[in-house]
Image (cartoon, rainbow, N blue to C red; front, side, top):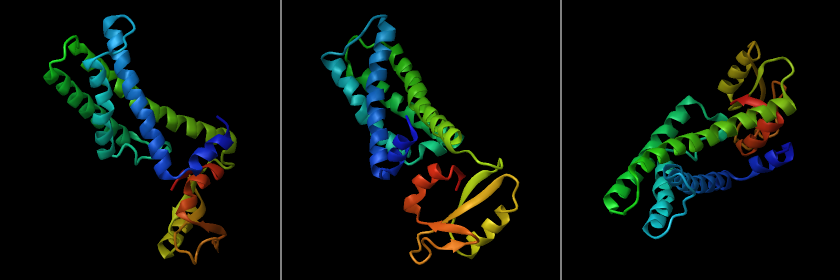
Length: 216
C-alpha cells in the first residue's frame, strides 16, 4: 500500500471509514466461525441448514455489541491499551451471547469447544487486525516522513489563549514539537499564530499523514 492509497483512505469521511471497518469485521466473524468448526472437526467445514443460520446470525449479534462498545469510534492509528481492553470486553460478550444462543437453540452437531475456539480466534483477529493497522500506519508514516530533530510532531487543538499558552510551553519541550493549530473557528482558519498555521478539524486526517503527527 503506497502513500497515495493511504491518503485516499484517510480522506474518506469518518462514516465511510467506519463502514469499511464494520464490513471487515463482519467478514472476519463469518470466516472465524467457519475456521472454528473446521479446526474442531479436523477437516474443511461448510455450514448447511441450521448451522448456516447460526453462523450468519453471529454478525447480527456482534455488530450492535461492537457499536455499543465504541469499536468504530477509535481511530486505528490511536488504539492504545485502553481501547484494546474494550475490544476484549466486546469480543468476549459477543462470543458469550452467541454461545448461549447456540446451546439454547438445540441445533445438533455443534461441539461446545467451537464456542471457545470462536472466542479465541475472534480475540486474535478482531483485536489483532487493529494492532496491525496501528503498526502499519505508524511504520508507513515514519518511513516516508519522519521527524528531523527526534521530537514528536504534535497538533495543538484550539488556537485561543489556552492553545497559545500550550504551544508556547511545548516549544520548549525536548520530546514534543508543536507544528500547527486545529480550530473550527472560521475567522482563524488559514491564519498564522506563532508562525504556525491554523487548520480546521476536517483536515485532521490528512495533516496526521502529511505532517507526521503523533500527538493531538
